[in-house]
Image (cartoon, rainbow over all chains, first blue to last red):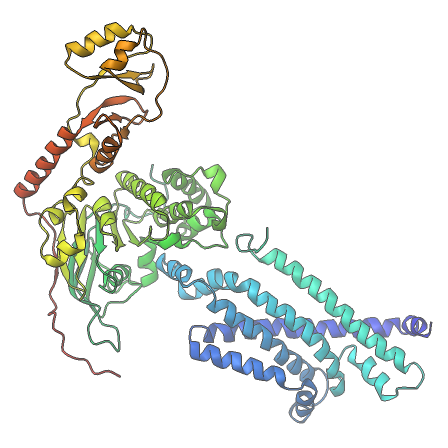
Amino acid sequence: MALLSFVIDRSDQIWFASWQHLSLVVQSLTLAVALSLILAFLVYNSQKLSAVANGLSAVGLTIPSFALIGLLIAPLGFGVTPSMVVVTFFAVLPILRNAVVGLSGVDKAIVESARGIGIGRIRTMLTIELPLAWPVILTGVRISAQMTMGIAAVTAYVLGPGLGSFIFSGLSRLGGANSLEAVVVGVVGVILLAFILDLFLVGIGRLTISRGIRVSN
Amino acid sequence: MSATNTTQSNDQASRTILLDKVTKHYPGQLKPAVDGLMLEIPAGKIVMLVGPSGCGKTTTLKMINRLIEPTSGRIMLGDEDVTDLDGDKLRRRMGYVIQAGGLFPHMTVAANIAIVPKMLGWSKDAISKRIDELLDLVSLDPALYRDRYPKELSGGQQQRVGVARALAAEPPVLLMDEPFGAVDPITRQRLQDELIRIQEEVQKTIVFVTHDFDEAVKLGDLIVIFGEDGQIVQYDSPERILAQPANDFVADFIGAGAGLKQLTLARVRDVQLADPVTASPGEKGADVLARVQQTNHDYVVITDGRGRPISWLSRRQLSRLDTIDKSKNPDLPLVAEGSTLNDALDAMLASRLGAALVTNRSKALVGMITFDIVMKSINQLRADVQTADDESPVGTNTGSPEVSEVPND
């Protein structure tokens, strides 16, 4: 009952924070997709560089997000900027990995036949290799989306936008009035947002993956 | 038959390709993969490049459309020097077919075919018309196949679409890199026959890489045989290569049964067929028997109203029949006019009569082929090769086979 009244009393605040949270994740994710694709296209033709990229993304994922965001206070201060940087950094890792794997998995014979009928290098990347690797890349985007929803909550530590503020303020005065409610709202909100975003990404998959390469019809 | 389009140049006519002292030297390798190759590929002919793996045949093919840039030498397309032309632009003017067609799996059949015309700026209507035309050409119903994806096609159908895509912008040249390597033998044979038929219509200059000598004999107007070191060993017509292999390497490569292989070079329609006695259902057995005896034949072919053979009766069978019935014998040894003598011989061996019936496109009887006829044409073939003028085009390596060592880095 206390939870319900907490939610009703603060519905404006909760809506706003949720929206900010989603917006932070989606913007960072978009930026991350662009960055990952550029990086992946630069490295996927070389086995050495691909291995380096995969290694870095594996190591990158082991960095505690909380530590990284704390370290960024000195150069970037508080607020949206460090939040954006941290969320984008972590979003890049799974996407980059999947993009490298996806692009190197494209049948070399198909690429050669594209070049052989006179499709230019860049055009082959964009119209042949990218669409063929897209299902794998999109899976990376979905993993990133799930993961960064949680990381975005941590950015409340540097006063970033989103639902993290409910969790942090609740935890800091745990036992006090409405403290548990605040934490629950923050956590459940993040889970719901992650679910909604994932549904949205599945929808994007439906629209953007060619019927010719979809696994099931 | 040709697509009307404003952006098309008069490039469609087939053109001679000339490789002039072309060399490809991969960095870090001692010997060049292709060394001083001088090769003339006459307009409108199918030239087969054959040889063991690593002999430079694929490298040679890919240097024609500059997927592989030659280290030195010049490439001429007709009177035009294309050595320094933009590679992508050059490739749009040359059809390219690889194993399994190399279709783009995320695009429909129509989209696959449309790629090159689109890049060349054809109008939508012209492209759409061209797609239907090409699908018809490769014997796929446009209404059924236009909107399918490659994975919804069989291997043979994918290969056909691959050929259609290569022909889309009416290139003067078609390059094929072991296109039929990945399909089963029956489909391969069908695709080969199809290619022969298509070539009769389109008359392109075709360069075709294969490691299968039988395929080379079947499809080629001319065959280039590469040796293991990338040198051209022999460049000649299949007839002459079979009859007069240049050296032991070629003889080995041809393998056993060169004489039999010559049979695949002559077609049934090219030989003088025998005329069998024919009769129709409903005729009196005795009347027909009299006719057979009169003409000194042993058998009679019964044909239906449209001249299609339905059975083949001996004198003895005839003598037992009152009237000839309409019953159809499903095991008749039939061969088409377009079949090779090899196919005909095969049908004759399977038949207990030692002969086969020849039918035309509408399956009507046109004649009979016997062992004697086949023997006569083999002798004729041999005589032709001996007396033929030496008209084979240029094909040599000017580079020395012994190559000075290159420092390895």
